[in-house]
Length: 332
Picture 1 (cartoon, rainbow, N blue to C red):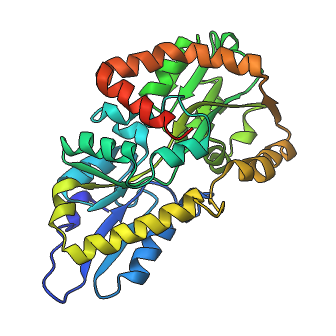
Picture 2: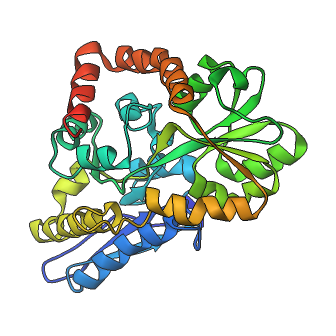
């Protein structure tokens, strides 16, 4: 659907349901991710009858991945689900969500819960550019997948052409000796088939959706970086909505966050337990060899990533960068 053909100006009057457009590039039926995003839409529409209704456009039918932020700024969409890698160019502060400074998904989820110090700090930074992160669904981590070579140490990546989902992942791979090739996940299968790349940094759930097991023999289970697709709005538009609408959407965001992150009830829709019991066995049945690193091997990757973490701190400013890492550590 052409961008110019959509009227995304959300007009409302008293006693009239506010209709908002929400967009995502995640395909309908995409394993796990689509269900998570659709749940938010369904929860708002169920509770918001007569108050607010979300018209959802999935699968990039309204805006492709790179178009989501420009589309939000232009008013084509009122709300977007957007992968954090796509926002780095305009919002480098978001890089803390990607760099490998997290111990596990529990720490990631805890530190960024709605109302937390880190959540508030992030939105203070985003407000300077009129953006508001409503809620994050938590994170998945990028593993390393290769066609022919087992990866156990950063040095094993030397000389390999590895797909990177974004700027920070490219820097991490380059620091470890690989030649990063930045591309969307949709292009990975063809790039592997044609020999354009030797492997990819991609999260296990996305990899399943792209059929990576058909092209790669090895999967190294190590969080080289993290990916998330939070919900964003323009700050001024969010603040312009009636109080009743904002209260309802924020209430849904809190409840949705509890469901998808598993706070208190361990029912996260994407979890480490699911990775172990469902995703990894799936790849093994497909003939892939899954590599788990020893503590010594993991430490080598931690050391290799340090220059990139320091680079990010310099990018956002030493004081802000260190403050951010301190808030992360508060959720140990």
